[in-house]
Length: 86
Image (tube, rainbow, N blue to C red; front, top):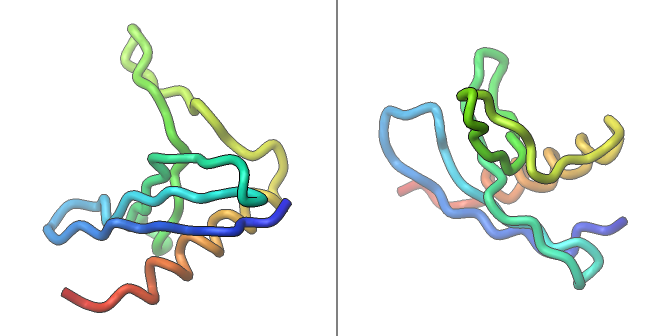
């Protein structure tokens, strides 16, 4: 798997949500709505999710192993960090 494109839209404000991202995998599959969140241990990437009737959130798409999760998170946070300050 190769992440061939990362697009990030940064948000300004006091919210923990810092940006929304989309990644393209192998130039043929796109995942939208990855959220960059400022957590207690720094920035992390939350996968796209849907709110269930009981109020819980379930991931719609997510990696099935830690190596892939790390690859996605590193690519998205790197793209976020390269955005100019507003």
